[in-house]
Image 1 (cartoon, rainbow, N blue to C red):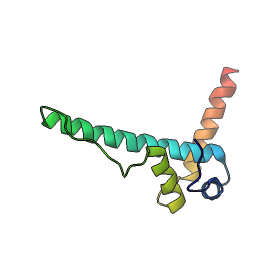
Image 2 (image 1 turned 45 degrees about the vertical axis):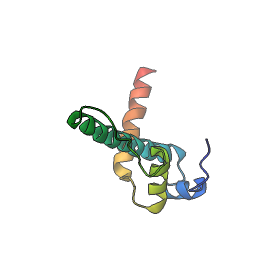
Image 3 (image 1 turned 135 degrees about the vertical axis):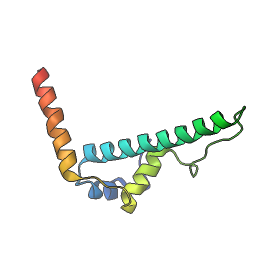
Length: 97
């Protein structure tokens, strides 16, 4: 699978040309979208005796939706929070070496 729309260069420009940051932001948002869809589905099945509703999120997968939100500027990140998470991750890795 390749990211063709939105173009990868546009997405990287929104995330400081950092592929790890782009993947992290998109991953977190895609997980949120999956959890929302799963929660809606579970609420529907809890109310009804049978499941007759198909959940549709604009016909796109959650990663594509997240990438589009990044390009549109509706999804962003807090640089200081991201930097502190990375520092914490690096410290844990160095500790385990």
